[in-house]
Length: 461
Image (tube, rainbow, N blue to C red; front, top):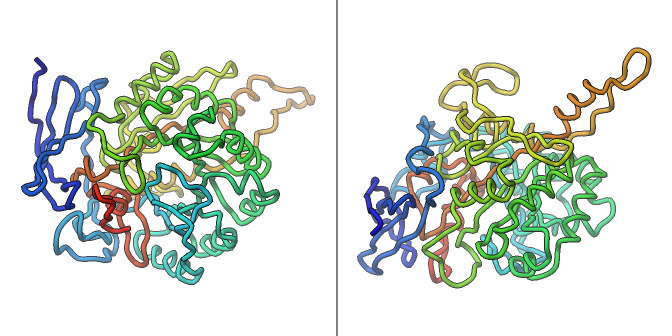
Protein backbone atom coordinates (compact mmCIF):
# COMPACT_ATOMS: atom_id res chain seq x y z
CA UNK A 1 0.00 0.00 0.00
CA UNK A 2 1.34 3.44 -0.96
CA UNK A 3 2.33 5.67 1.96
CA UNK A 4 0.26 8.87 2.19
CA UNK A 5 1.43 12.04 3.88
CA UNK A 6 -0.13 15.51 4.12
CA UNK A 7 2.67 17.94 3.30
CA UNK A 8 0.91 21.25 3.89
CA UNK A 9 -2.16 23.31 3.10
CA UNK A 10 -2.90 26.04 0.61
CA UNK A 11 -5.99 27.54 -1.03
CA UNK A 12 -7.55 26.82 -4.40
CA UNK A 13 -10.94 27.12 -6.11
CA UNK A 14 -13.78 24.78 -6.98
CA UNK A 15 -13.64 23.81 -10.70
CA UNK A 16 -17.44 23.99 -10.87
CA UNK A 17 -18.36 27.24 -9.12
CA UNK A 18 -14.92 28.95 -8.84
CA UNK A 19 -15.47 29.52 -5.12
CA UNK A 20 -12.29 29.75 -3.01
CA UNK A 21 -11.76 26.60 -0.92
CA UNK A 22 -8.96 25.08 1.20
CA UNK A 23 -6.67 22.55 -0.47
CA UNK A 24 -3.98 20.20 0.78
CA UNK A 25 -0.83 18.93 -0.84
CA UNK A 26 -0.75 15.21 -0.33
CA UNK A 27 2.23 12.96 -0.98
CA UNK A 28 1.53 9.42 -2.21
CA UNK A 29 4.75 7.53 -2.61
CA UNK A 30 6.94 10.06 -4.42
CA UNK A 31 4.12 11.79 -6.33
CA UNK A 32 2.25 14.81 -4.94
CA UNK A 33 -1.46 15.53 -5.41
CA UNK A 34 -3.67 18.47 -4.60
CA UNK A 35 -6.95 17.50 -2.96
CA UNK A 36 -9.82 19.82 -2.11
CA UNK A 37 -13.50 19.71 -1.25
CA UNK A 38 -16.22 22.14 -2.26
CA UNK A 39 -19.18 22.01 0.15
CA UNK A 40 -21.54 22.29 -2.84
CA UNK A 41 -19.80 20.19 -5.52
CA UNK A 42 -17.77 17.55 -3.72
CA UNK A 43 -14.19 16.30 -3.84
CA UNK A 44 -11.48 16.99 -6.44
CA UNK A 45 -7.94 15.71 -6.78
CA UNK A 46 -5.15 16.22 -9.31
CA UNK A 47 -1.49 15.27 -9.62
CA UNK A 48 0.85 18.26 -9.33
CA UNK A 49 4.25 16.52 -9.18
CA UNK A 50 5.43 13.13 -10.42
CA UNK A 51 7.82 10.83 -8.58
CA UNK A 52 10.95 11.48 -10.62
CA UNK A 53 12.58 14.06 -8.33
CA UNK A 54 11.89 14.70 -4.62
CA UNK A 55 9.18 17.35 -4.38
CA UNK A 56 10.60 18.96 -1.25
CA UNK A 57 14.11 19.24 -2.71
CA UNK A 58 12.84 21.21 -5.70
CA UNK A 59 11.56 24.09 -3.58
CA UNK A 60 13.40 27.40 -3.34
CA UNK A 61 12.95 30.23 -0.91
CA UNK A 62 11.57 33.22 -2.82
CA UNK A 63 11.69 36.70 -1.36
CA UNK A 64 8.34 38.49 -1.91
CA UNK A 65 8.35 41.81 -3.76
CA UNK A 66 5.32 44.09 -3.83
CA UNK A 67 4.17 45.18 -7.30
CA UNK A 68 4.93 48.70 -8.46
CA UNK A 69 1.85 50.95 -8.46
CA UNK A 70 -0.90 48.32 -7.89
CA UNK A 71 -4.05 49.07 -9.90
CA UNK A 72 -6.53 47.37 -7.55
CA UNK A 73 -7.10 47.02 -3.82
CA UNK A 74 -7.61 43.90 -1.72
CA UNK A 75 -11.33 43.30 -1.22
CA UNK A 76 -12.32 39.67 -1.89
CA UNK A 77 -8.80 38.24 -1.76
CA UNK A 78 -6.80 36.18 -4.25
CA UNK A 79 -7.71 35.30 -7.01
CA UNK A 80 -10.55 37.85 -7.23
CA UNK A 81 -8.74 41.20 -6.93
CA UNK A 82 -6.14 40.91 -9.69
CA UNK A 83 -4.89 44.14 -11.05
CA UNK A 84 -2.13 43.60 -9.64
CA UNK A 85 -3.25 44.00 -6.04
CA UNK A 86 -0.91 44.87 -3.13
CA UNK A 87 -0.98 41.24 -1.92
CA UNK A 88 0.73 39.99 -5.08
CA UNK A 89 4.32 38.94 -4.45
CA UNK A 90 6.27 39.55 -7.67
CA UNK A 91 6.88 42.24 -10.27
CA UNK A 92 6.23 41.61 -13.96
CA UNK A 93 8.79 39.82 -16.11
CA UNK A 94 6.84 39.32 -19.34
CA UNK A 95 3.58 41.13 -20.05
CA UNK A 96 1.22 39.73 -22.68
CA UNK A 97 -0.58 42.33 -24.76
CA UNK A 98 -3.53 40.63 -26.44
CA UNK A 99 -4.09 42.48 -29.69
CA UNK A 100 -6.96 40.36 -31.04
CA UNK A 101 -9.36 37.55 -30.19
CA UNK A 102 -9.30 36.35 -33.81
CA UNK A 103 -7.30 33.41 -35.11
CA UNK A 104 -6.63 31.78 -38.48
CA UNK A 105 -6.73 28.35 -36.83
CA UNK A 106 -9.46 26.61 -34.85
CA UNK A 107 -7.32 24.48 -32.54
CA UNK A 108 -9.14 21.86 -30.44
CA UNK A 109 -6.84 23.00 -27.61
CA UNK A 110 -6.74 26.77 -26.99
CA UNK A 111 -6.49 28.50 -23.61
CA UNK A 112 -7.91 31.69 -25.19
CA UNK A 113 -10.82 29.99 -26.99
CA UNK A 114 -9.94 32.12 -30.02
CA UNK A 115 -12.41 32.36 -32.89
CA UNK A 116 -13.26 34.55 -35.87
CA UNK A 117 -15.18 37.40 -34.25
CA UNK A 118 -13.58 40.66 -35.34
CA UNK A 119 -13.48 43.02 -32.38
CA UNK A 120 -9.83 44.07 -32.21
CA UNK A 121 -8.82 46.78 -29.75
CA UNK A 122 -7.84 49.96 -31.64
CA UNK A 123 -4.18 50.96 -31.89
CA UNK A 124 -4.76 53.96 -29.59
CA UNK A 125 -6.01 51.68 -26.82
CA UNK A 126 -3.00 49.37 -27.15
CA UNK A 127 -0.61 52.32 -27.04
CA UNK A 128 -2.36 53.67 -23.93
CA UNK A 129 -1.79 50.30 -22.25
CA UNK A 130 1.89 50.29 -23.21
CA UNK A 131 2.26 53.82 -21.81
CA UNK A 132 0.59 52.79 -18.57
CA UNK A 133 2.95 49.82 -18.19
CA UNK A 134 5.82 52.30 -17.84
CA UNK A 135 4.26 53.33 -14.53
CA UNK A 136 3.88 49.74 -13.30
CA UNK A 137 7.45 48.54 -13.17
CA UNK A 138 8.30 49.25 -16.79
CA UNK A 139 9.95 49.29 -19.21
CA UNK A 140 8.97 45.64 -19.63
CA UNK A 141 9.36 42.70 -21.99
CA UNK A 142 6.23 42.63 -24.15
CA UNK A 143 4.72 39.57 -25.80
CA UNK A 144 2.18 40.34 -28.52
CA UNK A 145 -0.47 37.68 -28.24
CA UNK A 146 -4.12 36.88 -28.83
CA UNK A 147 -5.74 35.08 -30.62
CA UNK A 148 -3.27 35.06 -33.48
CA UNK A 149 -1.69 38.54 -33.51
CA UNK A 150 -0.58 38.38 -37.15
CA UNK A 151 -4.19 38.60 -38.36
CA UNK A 152 -3.74 42.32 -37.68
CA UNK A 153 -1.85 44.31 -40.32
CA UNK A 154 -0.48 46.96 -37.97
CA UNK A 155 1.82 44.79 -35.80
CA UNK A 156 5.01 46.36 -37.22
CA UNK A 157 3.73 49.86 -36.38
CA UNK A 158 2.82 48.74 -32.86
CA UNK A 159 6.35 47.40 -32.30
CA UNK A 160 7.92 50.62 -33.57
CA UNK A 161 5.81 52.80 -31.29
CA UNK A 162 6.27 50.48 -28.31
CA UNK A 163 10.04 50.62 -28.66
CA UNK A 164 9.95 54.40 -29.03
CA UNK A 165 8.25 54.48 -25.62
CA UNK A 166 11.16 52.55 -24.13
CA UNK A 167 9.96 48.94 -23.90
CA UNK A 168 13.17 47.12 -24.90
CA UNK A 169 12.03 43.68 -26.02
CA UNK A 170 9.10 42.55 -28.18
CA UNK A 171 8.27 38.94 -28.94
CA UNK A 172 5.47 37.68 -31.17
CA UNK A 173 3.40 34.71 -30.00
CA UNK A 174 2.35 33.14 -33.29
CA UNK A 175 1.39 29.95 -35.09
CA UNK A 176 3.72 31.00 -37.92
CA UNK A 177 1.23 30.74 -40.78
CA UNK A 178 1.61 34.33 -42.03
CA UNK A 179 5.39 34.20 -41.57
CA UNK A 180 5.48 31.09 -43.75
CA UNK A 181 3.04 32.18 -46.42
CA UNK A 182 3.56 35.92 -46.92
CA UNK A 183 6.82 36.93 -48.53
CA UNK A 184 8.41 39.96 -46.89
CA UNK A 185 6.35 39.77 -43.69
CA UNK A 186 9.22 38.54 -41.50
CA UNK A 187 11.47 41.26 -42.93
CA UNK A 188 8.86 43.93 -42.09
CA UNK A 189 8.74 42.68 -38.50
CA UNK A 190 12.53 42.65 -38.28
CA UNK A 191 12.77 46.21 -39.59
CA UNK A 192 10.18 47.27 -37.02
CA UNK A 193 12.42 45.90 -34.28
CA UNK A 194 10.84 42.54 -33.40
CA UNK A 195 13.32 40.64 -31.24
CA UNK A 196 11.86 37.14 -31.07
CA UNK A 197 9.20 34.88 -32.51
CA UNK A 198 7.55 32.66 -29.88
CA UNK A 199 6.57 29.93 -32.33
CA UNK A 200 3.83 27.41 -31.56
CA UNK A 201 5.70 24.15 -32.30
CA UNK A 202 4.13 20.96 -30.98
CA UNK A 203 6.18 18.28 -32.71
CA UNK A 204 7.90 17.00 -35.82
CA UNK A 205 5.06 15.00 -37.39
CA UNK A 206 1.79 16.14 -38.91
CA UNK A 207 -0.14 13.63 -36.82
CA UNK A 208 0.68 15.73 -33.75
CA UNK A 209 -0.60 18.91 -35.41
CA UNK A 210 -3.77 17.22 -36.64
CA UNK A 211 -4.67 16.24 -33.09
CA UNK A 212 -3.65 19.45 -31.29
CA UNK A 213 -4.19 22.08 -34.03
CA UNK A 214 -6.68 20.43 -36.37
CA UNK A 215 -4.55 20.37 -39.55
CA UNK A 216 -1.13 19.47 -40.98
CA UNK A 217 1.35 22.22 -40.08
CA UNK A 218 4.87 20.81 -39.84
CA UNK A 219 5.98 22.14 -43.25
CA UNK A 220 4.46 25.51 -42.34
CA UNK A 221 6.53 25.63 -39.16
CA UNK A 222 9.74 24.93 -41.08
CA UNK A 223 8.93 27.67 -43.60
CA UNK A 224 8.26 30.14 -40.78
CA UNK A 225 11.64 29.35 -39.22
CA UNK A 226 13.34 29.81 -42.59
CA UNK A 227 11.69 33.21 -43.01
CA UNK A 228 12.93 34.26 -39.57
CA UNK A 229 16.41 33.00 -40.42
CA UNK A 230 16.58 35.19 -43.52
CA UNK A 231 15.37 38.19 -41.49
CA UNK A 232 17.61 37.67 -38.45
CA UNK A 233 14.76 37.15 -35.99
CA UNK A 234 15.36 34.70 -33.13
CA UNK A 235 12.86 31.86 -32.73
CA UNK A 236 11.83 30.08 -29.55
CA UNK A 237 9.96 26.82 -30.16
CA UNK A 238 6.93 26.52 -27.87
CA UNK A 239 5.48 23.00 -27.67
CA UNK A 240 2.17 22.41 -25.91
CA UNK A 241 2.64 18.92 -24.48
CA UNK A 242 -0.42 16.66 -24.53
CA UNK A 243 0.20 13.31 -22.90
CA UNK A 244 -0.19 10.44 -25.35
CA UNK A 245 0.10 12.77 -28.36
CA UNK A 246 3.53 14.39 -28.38
CA UNK A 247 5.20 13.70 -25.03
CA UNK A 248 7.23 11.03 -26.84
CA UNK A 249 8.66 13.73 -29.14
CA UNK A 250 10.37 15.84 -26.45
CA UNK A 251 13.83 14.63 -27.51
CA UNK A 252 13.03 15.00 -31.21
CA UNK A 253 11.96 18.61 -30.65
CA UNK A 254 15.23 19.36 -28.84
CA UNK A 255 17.25 17.80 -31.66
CA UNK A 256 15.25 19.77 -34.23
CA UNK A 257 16.06 22.96 -32.30
CA UNK A 258 19.76 22.06 -32.23
CA UNK A 259 19.77 21.45 -35.97
CA UNK A 260 18.31 24.92 -36.55
CA UNK A 261 20.75 26.96 -34.46
CA UNK A 262 21.38 29.88 -34.26
CA UNK A 263 17.97 30.98 -35.61
CA UNK A 264 16.28 28.79 -33.00
CA UNK A 265 17.57 30.17 -29.71
CA UNK A 266 15.52 28.10 -27.30
CA UNK A 267 12.73 25.65 -26.55
CA UNK A 268 10.04 26.56 -24.04
CA UNK A 269 7.85 23.56 -23.15
CA UNK A 270 4.32 24.08 -21.82
CA UNK A 271 2.47 21.02 -20.48
CA UNK A 272 -1.19 21.26 -21.41
CA UNK A 273 -3.48 23.22 -19.12
CA UNK A 274 -7.23 22.68 -18.99
CA UNK A 275 -8.51 26.19 -19.64
CA UNK A 276 -10.35 27.85 -22.48
CA UNK A 277 -11.10 25.27 -25.17
CA UNK A 278 -9.91 21.76 -24.35
CA UNK A 279 -11.06 18.15 -24.72
CA UNK A 280 -13.88 17.28 -22.35
CA UNK A 281 -12.78 16.33 -18.84
CA UNK A 282 -9.66 17.14 -16.84
CA UNK A 283 -7.58 14.11 -15.83
CA UNK A 284 -6.37 13.42 -12.30
CA UNK A 285 -2.97 12.25 -13.50
CA UNK A 286 -1.03 14.96 -15.32
CA UNK A 287 2.19 15.37 -17.29
CA UNK A 288 3.91 17.51 -14.66
CA UNK A 289 7.25 19.30 -14.64
CA UNK A 290 8.91 16.28 -13.07
CA UNK A 291 7.49 14.03 -15.82
CA UNK A 292 8.94 16.45 -18.38
CA UNK A 293 12.36 16.51 -16.71
CA UNK A 294 12.43 12.72 -16.76
CA UNK A 295 11.35 12.68 -20.44
CA UNK A 296 14.14 15.09 -21.37
CA UNK A 297 16.79 12.94 -19.70
CA UNK A 298 15.41 9.70 -21.13
CA UNK A 299 14.84 10.98 -24.69
CA UNK A 300 18.27 12.66 -24.93
CA UNK A 301 19.89 9.45 -23.62
CA UNK A 302 21.26 11.30 -20.61
CA UNK A 303 22.93 14.13 -22.54
CA UNK A 304 20.53 16.43 -20.69
CA UNK A 305 20.04 15.31 -17.11
CA UNK A 306 17.28 16.27 -14.71
CA UNK A 307 19.97 17.73 -12.47
CA UNK A 308 21.10 20.08 -15.26
CA UNK A 309 17.95 22.14 -14.73
CA UNK A 310 17.06 24.67 -12.04
CA UNK A 311 13.72 25.68 -10.55
CA UNK A 312 12.73 29.31 -10.87
CA UNK A 313 13.56 31.89 -8.24
CA UNK A 314 11.82 34.91 -9.76
CA UNK A 315 8.52 33.04 -9.55
CA UNK A 316 7.35 30.02 -7.60
CA UNK A 317 9.74 27.06 -7.90
CA UNK A 318 6.92 24.73 -8.97
CA UNK A 319 5.95 26.91 -11.94
CA UNK A 320 8.98 26.44 -14.16
CA UNK A 321 12.49 25.20 -14.76
CA UNK A 322 15.34 26.14 -17.05
CA UNK A 323 18.80 25.17 -18.22
CA UNK A 324 21.37 26.39 -20.70
CA UNK A 325 23.24 24.05 -23.07
CA UNK A 326 25.94 24.04 -25.69
CA UNK A 327 25.28 22.00 -28.82
CA UNK A 328 28.41 20.18 -29.95
CA UNK A 329 29.21 19.85 -33.63
CA UNK A 330 28.01 16.23 -33.59
CA UNK A 331 24.62 17.40 -32.34
CA UNK A 332 25.10 16.23 -28.75
CA UNK A 333 24.33 18.47 -25.78
CA UNK A 334 26.54 19.74 -22.97
CA UNK A 335 25.14 21.53 -19.94
CA UNK A 336 26.43 25.05 -19.32
CA UNK A 337 24.73 25.38 -15.94
CA UNK A 338 24.27 23.07 -13.00
CA UNK A 339 20.83 22.49 -11.58
CA UNK A 340 22.29 23.34 -8.18
CA UNK A 341 22.89 26.94 -9.26
CA UNK A 342 20.32 29.61 -8.63
CA UNK A 343 18.31 30.52 -11.70
CA UNK A 344 16.16 33.42 -12.79
CA UNK A 345 13.68 30.99 -14.31
CA UNK A 346 14.87 31.37 -17.89
CA UNK A 347 18.26 29.72 -17.68
CA UNK A 348 20.47 32.48 -16.29
CA UNK A 349 22.46 31.86 -13.11
CA UNK A 350 21.68 34.44 -10.43
CA UNK A 351 24.80 36.14 -9.00
CA UNK A 352 25.25 36.90 -5.33
CA UNK A 353 24.67 40.59 -6.02
CA UNK A 354 22.03 40.84 -8.76
CA UNK A 355 22.64 43.53 -11.36
CA UNK A 356 20.63 45.09 -14.13
CA UNK A 357 21.66 45.19 -17.77
CA UNK A 358 23.88 48.23 -17.19
CA UNK A 359 25.80 46.50 -14.39
CA UNK A 360 24.36 48.47 -11.47
CA UNK A 361 23.26 46.55 -8.36
CA UNK A 362 19.50 46.13 -8.17
CA UNK A 363 17.41 46.63 -5.05
CA UNK A 364 16.61 43.21 -3.63
CA UNK A 365 12.86 43.64 -3.85
CA UNK A 366 13.00 43.93 -7.64
CA UNK A 367 16.03 41.90 -8.65
CA UNK A 368 14.57 38.54 -9.68
CA UNK A 369 11.96 39.78 -12.16
CA UNK A 370 14.36 42.39 -13.55
CA UNK A 371 17.07 39.82 -14.07
CA UNK A 372 14.65 37.43 -15.72
CA UNK A 373 13.64 40.18 -18.17
CA UNK A 374 17.27 40.94 -18.99
CA UNK A 375 18.18 37.31 -19.55
CA UNK A 376 15.20 36.55 -21.80
CA UNK A 377 16.01 39.58 -23.95
CA UNK A 378 19.59 38.36 -24.33
CA UNK A 379 19.05 34.60 -24.70
CA UNK A 380 16.03 34.60 -27.03
CA UNK A 381 16.97 37.43 -29.40
CA UNK A 382 18.28 36.45 -32.82
CA UNK A 383 21.97 36.94 -33.50
CA UNK A 384 23.94 37.12 -36.71
CA UNK A 385 26.58 34.46 -37.12
CA UNK A 386 30.08 35.35 -35.98
CA UNK A 387 32.53 35.58 -38.85
CA UNK A 388 35.55 33.25 -38.60
CA UNK A 389 38.46 34.78 -36.73
CA UNK A 390 41.44 35.49 -38.96
CA UNK A 391 45.11 35.63 -38.03
CA UNK A 392 47.41 38.44 -39.08
CA UNK A 393 48.36 36.43 -42.17
CA UNK A 394 44.74 35.91 -43.14
CA UNK A 395 44.42 32.24 -42.22
CA UNK A 396 41.58 30.98 -40.04
CA UNK A 397 42.38 30.62 -36.35
CA UNK A 398 40.42 27.43 -35.72
CA UNK A 399 40.51 27.35 -31.93
CA UNK A 400 39.31 30.95 -31.58
CA UNK A 401 36.75 30.40 -34.32
CA UNK A 402 35.38 27.38 -32.45
CA UNK A 403 35.23 29.36 -29.25
CA UNK A 404 33.38 32.27 -30.83
CA UNK A 405 31.06 29.92 -32.68
CA UNK A 406 30.15 28.14 -29.44
CA UNK A 407 29.81 31.41 -27.59
CA UNK A 408 27.36 32.95 -30.02
CA UNK A 409 25.89 30.31 -32.30
CA UNK A 410 25.71 27.00 -30.47
CA UNK A 411 23.85 27.90 -27.26
CA UNK A 412 20.35 26.65 -26.59
CA UNK A 413 18.13 27.82 -23.72
CA UNK A 414 15.73 25.09 -22.55
CA UNK A 415 12.88 26.01 -20.24
CA UNK A 416 9.38 24.96 -19.28
CA UNK A 417 6.40 26.54 -17.61
CA UNK A 418 3.37 24.71 -16.30
CA UNK A 419 0.30 26.90 -16.11
CA UNK A 420 -2.54 26.20 -13.71
CA UNK A 421 -6.22 25.59 -14.31
CA UNK A 422 -9.31 25.38 -12.10
CA UNK A 423 -8.40 21.86 -11.00
CA UNK A 424 -4.82 22.49 -9.87
CA UNK A 425 -4.85 26.23 -9.05
CA UNK A 426 -2.60 26.88 -6.06
CA UNK A 427 -2.94 30.41 -4.68
CA UNK A 428 0.56 30.27 -3.17
CA UNK A 429 1.87 29.84 -6.71
CA UNK A 430 -0.50 32.39 -8.20
CA UNK A 431 0.66 35.16 -5.87
CA UNK A 432 4.24 34.54 -7.07
CA UNK A 433 3.34 34.80 -10.78
CA UNK A 434 5.38 37.15 -12.98
CA UNK A 435 3.72 36.39 -16.33
CA UNK A 436 0.92 38.95 -16.56
CA UNK A 437 -1.73 39.88 -19.11
CA UNK A 438 -2.38 43.58 -19.61
CA UNK A 439 -6.02 44.58 -19.71
CA UNK A 440 -6.37 48.35 -19.83
CA UNK A 441 -4.62 49.61 -16.70
CA UNK A 442 -4.73 46.23 -14.96
CA UNK A 443 -2.18 43.42 -14.90
CA UNK A 444 -3.69 39.98 -14.31
CA UNK A 445 -1.59 36.85 -13.71
CA UNK A 446 -1.79 34.52 -16.71
CA UNK A 447 -3.32 31.60 -14.81
CA UNK A 448 -5.99 33.77 -13.17
CA UNK A 449 -6.91 35.46 -16.44
CA UNK A 450 -7.50 32.15 -18.21
CA UNK A 451 -9.24 30.28 -15.37
CA UNK A 452 -12.16 28.38 -16.83
CA UNK A 453 -14.89 26.59 -14.88
CA UNK A 454 -16.10 23.13 -15.86
CA UNK A 455 -19.01 24.69 -17.79
CA UNK A 456 -16.76 27.12 -19.70
CA UNK A 457 -17.36 30.17 -17.51
CA UNK A 458 -14.27 32.32 -17.02
CA UNK A 459 -13.13 34.48 -14.13
CA UNK A 460 -11.52 37.32 -16.10
CA UNK A 461 -11.24 36.58 -19.84
